Length: 356
Image 1 (spheres, rainbow, N blue to C red):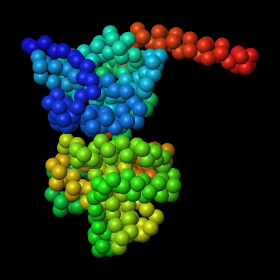
Image 2: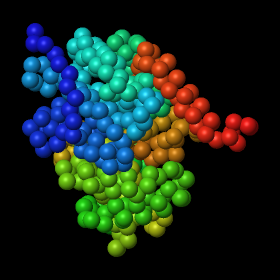
Image 3: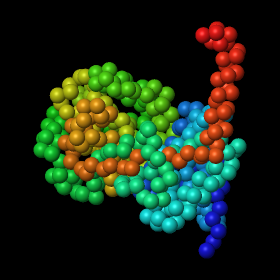
Image 4: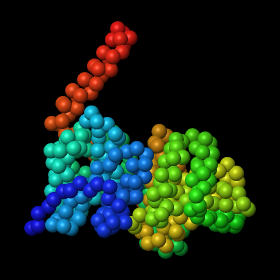
């Protein structure tokens, strides 16, 4: 058997030969997703995050790896986070166990180079948790929604409509009768237009909204490769709603969306979703991910208020294992000491605190 080697991939260009190999590896892995792509990494770097990109090779063939994100901290309190990763052959348990151990051992044995007290992974695996993750523990926060709703895009358009709830089909047809149109916008001002609608929806429906710069970074890095589409529902010159669709590999993701206050009764939101599904199907996607769903409609659930709307489109609820953490116990004590020392220095330099 050819030996395995792990290499750090620094500033990899997605258009380089190795960059194309990585994108092919990620986009064809159903357990991974766009958050492990170089395009997403470019957006995160512009937002101020550092990345650690590890590639695993069998001879000279890239077979696996992981893109980790971390805040810029030098005291070792970092947590390396791989949303939708690592990119491993998850169906081969024996090989996955070996490759995961290689990643853990490399990071732990090079703590000066990769200072971190823990490593957090978030593969899109459905339960139960596999045995090779028993040394991990459940992380307190998920970056990828643990519960979501998948639509099977392998179905014909007729079958997609048939598996929807009656209200979903009715409102799609109502939007068509009302003359609602849906268009794609990739102009330089698309983020301004998108954000205006999202702010209106955020204020009305009381949900948190990332700053405009977040969406501008996504647009700058995902639009050129056709991985993002900004869609707008319209009626007689009025913008009724917007939707940010992510297309990567065989999965399309409804990442963000919002409806304006104007003409809400015309069902612009239903027109947007139906158009997005057909667009994703035409692009070769086999799954439409509603990205966050609560089948039980729990009042305190993050997606409770949106799940009723999403449920109208049918589909299959999915529960993933969620984020899992591995703590490097050998470095945890050193990290704690560094933090205490920093606190002591700050305290000694502030007499009013020392006297408190």
